[in-house]
Length: 146
Image (cartoon, rainbow, N blue to C red; front, top):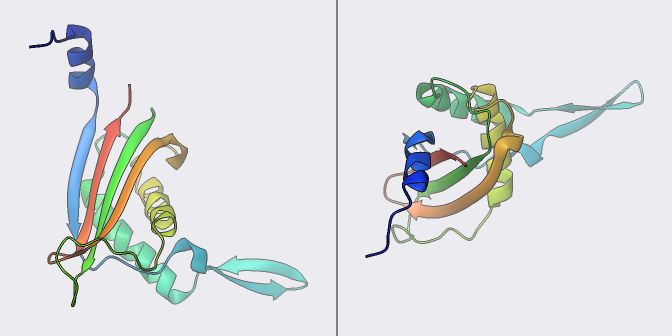
C-alpha cells in the first residue's frame, strides 16, 4: 500500500467543497441571445424577456445554495446539465444545442451575482457535461484548488 502524504491529506481537509443539485427544467436560452438596438446612432445591448426569465430562475435556485463565504481563491467547477429525457435514454449525452460554453456563461454570471465568488475568473478548472435525464436539473460542485 502506498504511503499517504500527510501534508496533502491536510490540504484536502482544509479545501472548501460544496455540491448540490437544483431540480428544474434547465433553461436552454443562453447569454449569447442578447439583442442589440441602435439608439441615437449607438448600439445598446438588452436582454430579451426569455433571457431575463432564465436568469431569474437560475438566481432563485442558486441563492438557496450560496456558500457562507464567497470563494476568493481559484476553484474547479463541475457542472452536469440534466435535460428532460423525452424519447432519449436516461443518462445519454445530449449532443444538441445549446452549447455547453454558452450554458456555462449564463450560469457563472448568475453565480457571481448570487455571491458564490468574487469573480468568475476564479474558475480555473471546469468540467461540463449535458445529458438527457429522468430527473432534470443542474448538478454543481465547486472545489477550492490548492
